[in-house]
Image 1: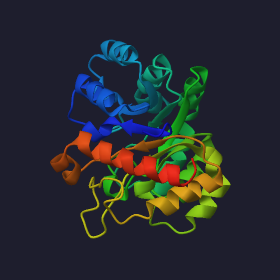
Image 2: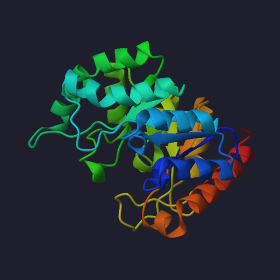
Image 3: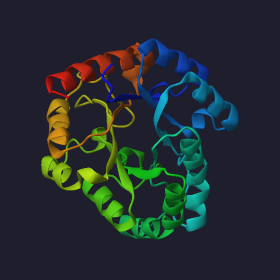
Image 4: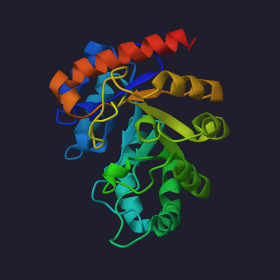
Amino acid sequence: MHPRISLNTISSLRWPLDDDLAMLDRLEAPHFGFPLLKIGSEIEAGIDRIRNSGRSVSCVAASTAAASLLTEEDALGVLAPAIDVADALNSPLCYFTSGTTPDGMSTDQACEALASALPPSIDYARSKGVRLAIENNSVTNRSLGFVHTLVDTIRVCEQTGLQICLELQNCWYEQDLPRLFREHVSLFGIVQVSDFRVGEDLRLNRRVLGDGSMPLVWMIEALLEAGYEGLFDIEVIGPCIDREGPESALRRSAEWLSERLEELGV
């Protein structure tokens, strides 16, 4: 597996941590990311098992489902546990989606409230040596967050000092991506990669890399030309992944991405 690939165990969301670690061993994954909920009920034990695995942790996802981050207290309460786990595992990055909003709140109001609420969380992450990044999440998952387009995500990051967990699934259809990549590559803390087949249900419905319609090679090449030097985190979920099985889907995705990176001279 190419050394710039990370596998995210959101792909095996219903598996217990020990099964994830065994799979990562079989796949010989150089890095992996995971959602905090994987160890949420037994954090210390989970940290110990991950440490003992010897695997490099690329990123930790905070648990923002059904959570509001629009006040300083709420944001820190949600983000600090994931920041602490990232710190304990020497992970450079903790990422999150922007959370819920009250009924009737506009996106402008929500982004303004989020930007005002995040400074203590950003300071806390910085004190731990962890970079805090926001993911551009799908508009089909408005319950998880309200920052969807790459342009809006960049704006929030420029206001706050956050980095971006760049989810290609959620921006591949936007215009002018090469320019956005070139001008803002310094904001990209990690790039998450999956595929999607046009015509299928948009929500939580991803494909193995190379099995869908996305111009993935073009996007990856544009990122590399922009100077991106970080990891590519494979995160595949949905009915096709469930039918095939997460391990097979991650293996095929990693093989495809490894071949493409080598062809691009990485």
